[in-house]
Length: 208
Ligand code: PRP
Image (cartoon, rainbow, N blue to C red; front, side, top):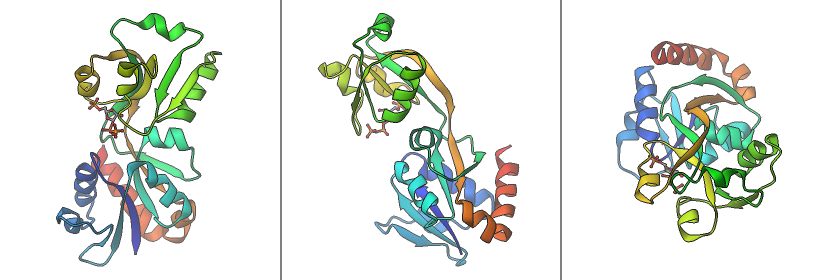
């Protein structure tokens, strides 16, 4: 059996649809349930439904053989796994954002940056030789500048509607092409090669 770690939330539907196109029976994922482990009706696949940021943890540990994870999460966590394929789903970008036209803030030596992506933000600013204060938040990042907790945010932007609704805008695109990636456990790729390699081949075909 092949085990997948799949993200609940905005990637869920697209991930299931893509796997279905590749011959993975995902009909069990259409059912409304609070169960977190599901098995395909043909008994070939198991699905763990996890928080998006937990996908790499399951795959690195080998509890799941395969996973679909956002590039943002992979950059942030740097887990020991194979990133095999860009699935071109859920495209977004990692940006610095704040109040409109306040690009001047980005060079402020006492800049306060709120983010879920602490490691990535530290890397970005250290590569620029800038020391900034990073404020770790778990969600609703846009609230930070609005309330005065931070000057800017470093966050993913997809449609831009959350920024707009909170009176903010992108000040700088830092990483574009943030999409969902197929990740594979290093041991599983060897021990379950006969099942995993054809599936990767099929995914490549469908994605391109
Ligand atoms: C993410 C991100 C932004 C929003 C961007 O949050 O942190 O808040 O999506 O998407 P948009 O550009 O399409 O508006 P998420 O929805 O994951 O919720 P969170 O605040 O709980 O992190």
